[in-house]
Image (cartoon, rainbow, N blue to C red; front, top):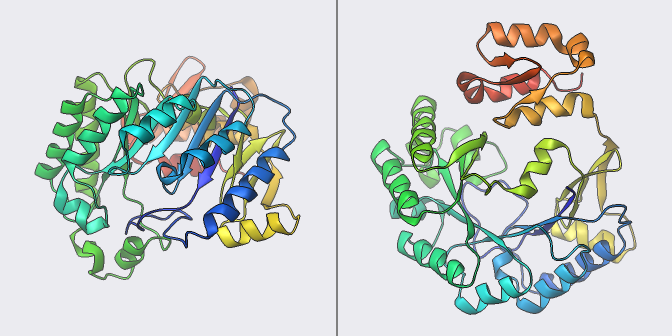
Length: 365
């Protein structure tokens, strides 16, 4: 099941934890970016028909209806089996939601991150828990009932009690999909850089310890399961039938094409990434140049493990896999990170928590 990802990197504010190539950009960039996106879409050699579409960012929920209609109209395959739009809480109105549905959007993903106001304010988020809950009802009224809510485990000031409060809201709202992400600490976000520098800005000195973050994550797994949301991927939980069809293709190595700044693609045996910044991407398209960067052959033999093992279902092991990775499988089993059932390997609960160590064993040398 092939799919399309559209990057819309424009935001109302830049959150402290965000390490994406998005942010608050001058509004005059938007029409230039839209034109570049349309040019890239119309010039793509479609050798397959997309069955899923995902609009991420950034905040594509800020896009006007005419822009959204033009971009979706340039993608073949409508009506798609799933079309997801990422939305910033507080930016959803009945008119917008109805327009999204009429244009073919069937799924929405809300960047709620937390349902505790003190935690939200430290990150720069402007919405309130009540406003996020109102957005969920607005989407449902418009006919978009397939809704995902994001939570981040490890935010500054987060405690066991505040985490329980966020999980209480998830239970109350009864959405069919939840994503739980561990806080990423790297130099690409203001908060991450502050943590690495042992600073205190953005609440960096109030980030829970690694042990507490693990405890919070495991508590989420437990509580979400009770409410019918089973973990099907390290960070994703869904009721049966509500798994993200688009995101599943990343972990199953199905083809997808990304359009826009910093978008990634895997198609026709190749992987590539577009120019990261809006200025570089638009500049390349305006000059008649390819925005592609770092194009290289895909490596399915190893990728199917360091990508596929993210799935709770695991990966089937072929005879060739056994010859190539057999010793690694045995070591990881001995260390309690992998388990085998017949020809299938999957992460153990401990392996989920140490997944990066497992994945490194399958990276191309």
